Length: 178
Image (cartoon, rainbow, N blue to C red; front, side, top):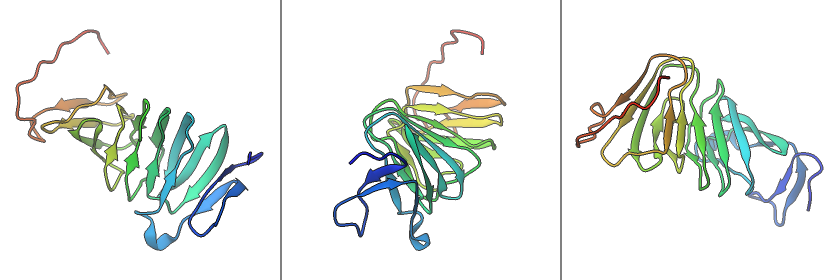
């Protein structure tokens, strides 16, 4: 089925499918574990409130009471745009980006493409590219932590290999200003 507005898909309690839906509201008693999973196409997620926001991939759908977001094998762009999540973010594959909220952020990178960040109650996984915001960002690396790229954006930003106990010598090579 092709949706002319919103999206089609499957959901708990629906035997076969839904179509032409422009908003989905999860049970508020399960915010952190309610999960919204994207279709396999390039998309953007904008988290604008507590466990709420908009998912866009051609069409848009508003979500409420969904604390956990899961991308796909394509490109996912997750942005904390004034909102927070009580659950987790899973990029699930592809080249994914997470942009933090406009607050002082602490990122702790604990594994390959995964860790924690201010504004996400759980973890982020399978997210290769991290972007700060206009405030300060501290990117802390634990032993085994790695990502493809980091852009601190504006503010006073720090790469910190000590606070989370990286436990190895590092080399930082400066290649350009900015």
